[in-house]
Length: 332
Ligand code: ASN
Ligand code: ZN
Ligand code: CA
Image 1 (cartoon, rainbow, N blue to C red):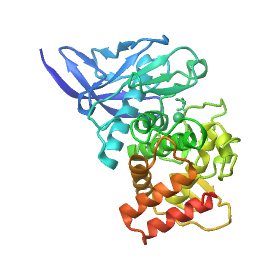
Image 2: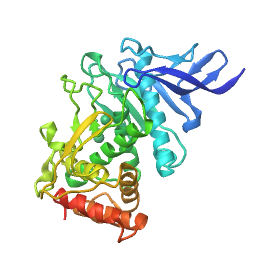
Image 3: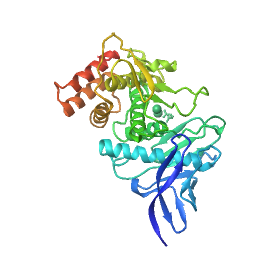
Image 4: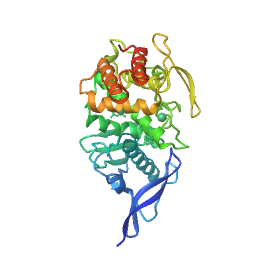
């Protein structure tokens, strides 16, 4: 029987109509992506354990854009895995989470009203809840990219998930999740420096986090202080998210893809950004070359400066911008 790699259609909840790489076997299609390490998307159908059932059907159109169709969240998850794979490959030359060409797998419809999504390095798999009332699956692009980036961190620097290293771990996921969202260049889920703006996680339609001014979420730190390591890692991440925004876009007011930002600095200094592409290269090189399991904010400054020196030179504009952006968030 005929077997092949196909291009199907995903009618997603958050990213509109997208191309999905699928597999055909005889008269059946499945959400299997042989062009990206064999990633597969499974339906847990509200269970909380096991692998679930591989999404398979006789047509190669997945979901209808509505939450009532079980394949809609699958289309979002498969798209998120696809764009995350491509982001790492095209941006950094990384082939998969372990850089060994092997794809992970994703499970959707975990439990009931489960308002989270998580990467698990032991199963090498991604899991998505359906959100409050099973109405808002946590399958948006930046969330997918955030969670799978926890796999990259676990398999590189291994930043411990507590204290300042935990904040750096979380920020790494926000930084690369945002990288994925911009990379996908999707007209429905546009690139921004907000995290979780599509998934209505607080029930008020507002984003979960803001990279230009992290304290807008009511808990995150804008600047380093000696107490930052005592915060939840999703709040101590604010310092590095803010650093990344400033390094990319600079301080002050700016509108990008229709979203307005206004990024402050601790000392009132003006920071000029070097662009997101270079900022991503610096963070990735630091993560994969210089950060270790116990890197703290001071170490992140040192590591990103080494990375900037390797990539652009120690007297480069880029190196000076890294210094200025860390100083602006009170990391010296
Ligand atoms: N969504 C949470 C996070 O990535 C779940 C977790 O793995 N801690 O931070
Ligand atoms: Zn996280
Ligand atoms: Ca976002």
